[in-house]
Length: 239
Image 1: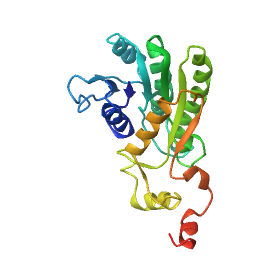
Image 2: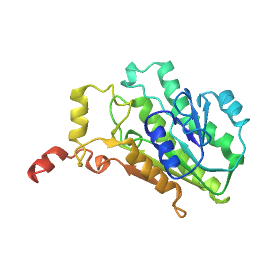
Image 3: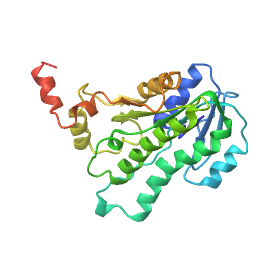
């Protein structure tokens, strides 16, 4: 089961699951384009920020759910004085409360051996000006992950957090070229990530039987280099 599975990282996770022969339930605001191939994907139009929408979707489902990936998210940038109540509430409701609502609804379908993988963000682990709402929501997701890991371990259910760095998706397409260049300059590997690379790690984490409550960064070294002149390091090394 993948929330936000119609685009970006969520879509890549769905593709990775299908490549492994799995059947997938996709929960997304727009299910268009998610129903592929026929018979192996069930796409449901769901707004994870709306508990009634989530409840209605789960009335159509039975278990078990082997892997639940919470990938649904929205981004609204701005400094604290620029972010209105509507933007703040939308980001928190989708990125944080939405994950909680889906896990709560899925709880009866999760069994021993099931795994939950939440998709975080580097701004949830390190402060970044202009991301007060998104960073706060993703930081909350880290706390949710650890708490759920403790609560669900008694039933053999694992919960982990995968933290992508700067990844080429439709969410990052609108970033101005100059800003993109500055971001990439701070990545030791010198390039953005690809959604498929994140999906590979999600699937590895989901299958790791002795991992729970953990945070795994897939960021090209971005977190390790925060505050370091990554471009100059590469230049000095001749890279």
